Length: 107
Image 1 (cartoon, rainbow, N blue to C red):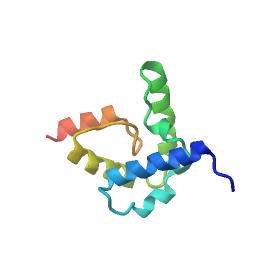
Image 2: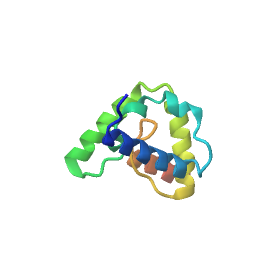
Image 3: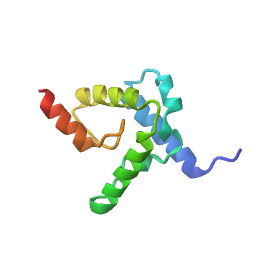
Image 4: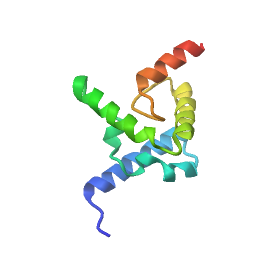
């Protein structure tokens, strides 16, 4: 199988993100079953603003909606974000803004 430069770049970004997210520890096995595993990373971490970002967030949430590991994903990202104090992207079917609202309510 021939792997494109874009696929290699996507895999590298995912690898770096997972290393940061899981503090260098092993990546949980649920990642292999995630609906986003074959989707472009940029869909979940859009760098554009305004309408294009809103469209990307909705598209990412649609991928998450049918994911069998959505709850594990959300739990892991919430744990990471509580340590990092930063929220970005779509994870577990939620936007960074939604997770920020939840965090504010839990204090």
